[in-house]
Image (cartoon, rainbow, N blue to C red; front, side, top):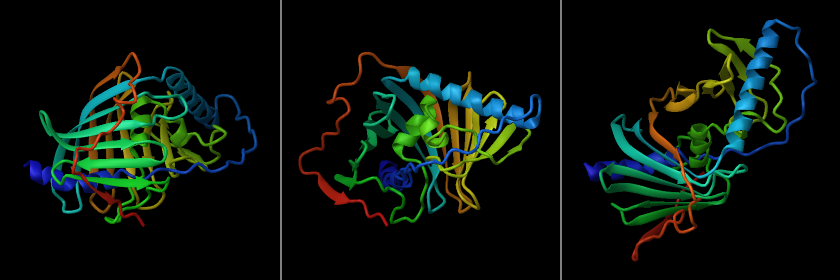
Length: 273
């Protein structure tokens, strides 16, 4: 069982390696919607979302998240691992981050460290560390560009989603439509480009790529992200369930955020294209 999980740990990691690049945004004209209109309600939903992000960033700090992940790989088989994700949650960036994938109690399928420029993924079963340097983690040799890095996952789960959805100016996108739950906005040069559905209270419910691409559903408990459902029309899917999220004090030391490789570990460069 462990060997099977280890076999699929690297493909899973490669699915998570896409980091988004910020682009300069041109501010749209400030069009004040008429009071009480659909446009006014859309603006209020966006303003509430921006306020939630501002509050989350202000309260950000060291964190530890425990949960599990069920995912379907390129072979269509279902796999499950437990996850431990931790970092110091700085206001300007969640990195460096550490993520462990566990196949059972005390059995580690993979250990990962991500900072702003480098990623190291150690697979104990293979006694190999896979490394990558640079900002572009957009694609893998498996050809599946899941637009979520480990840093993106941390931002989503801690509520600091502004880097992903707000864009440089934070202004409400000009294009939107009303839905049964709120409003679906077409994002303008944000970290994750595509469309974002917000509830009337400003909670992100759904993100989807334009066209037949990835979709991300977010479910909440007490207004906190509890489940992330990711899917692609080609059959890839993942469900991340948060079991526990806690704030940590004092902050993690550099040693606690480091990934020390065992002596004799082979190293390979991730083949990205």
